[in-house]
Image 1 (cartoon, rainbow, N blue to C red):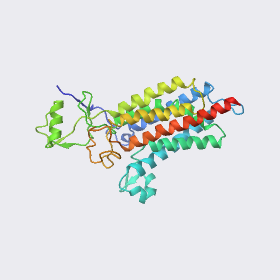
Image 2: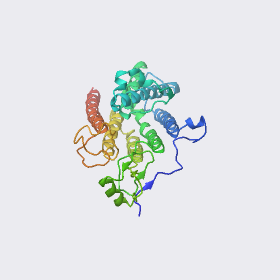
Image 3: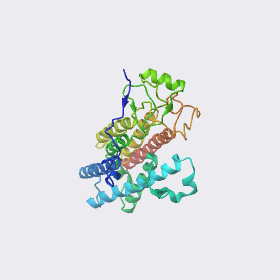
Image 4: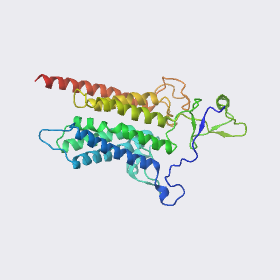
Length: 322
């Protein structure tokens, strides 16, 4: 009995594989386009419910589109900057920062490969705050409305990662483990590889380099950081106690869920573990005390959300007493 699943051969990163020019159209990009479209639809719905009502300002469609577009633009900038400056260990982008937004390598168009969620989080947050300040709107109120949409769109982003066969997890013997074609292969001569292959019923006797099954961590994230977190926020949207509460629920909730999912994701091999046994095998989860870069950033999100929520709650309580 095989305790793993082969990645479906019919899934390709390109929407039209093998078709010239149309091969540039990728599921990953389409999924993000769908995510942004859903975000606008939900934002408009929340606005129609009166969440953005103000005594001296009437919300327009242009306001909603401008707010969302500004947030997305800054999100993409932050995601790219975060990816190149935090996760790239070569130091190239620190020495030559102009390459961060240069989509060519060795004379070939490569696009912008590499995006960081946490960088995008900071960039998107700054973009939304800047728009609110320019239009004299409450950042807390508008960001609350925006986070009612963000997790739902996130579902499609992670599905796009899955269809790209990227951001897979660590190796696993669970029956739903998937052999991703682009995952790193291991020498069949290694004792731990032989033991693992025997455990899952994989015959590697005639294979020199072995591709072992991985956690489909993209789907874990799509479900927990996307659907589950969205349901929590969607339920709380009409019961919030102060402006900014939903934003804090999203930030802390995402950080909490992602922190634990990071135990199933594979850290970048060149970064390894930032805290704990830095020589430990990153392909297996051997200790809960080994923390990745993503876990450190998620912990900061949790602490930040609790701190900001406490400040906003106290501020709102004082205002209500006046």
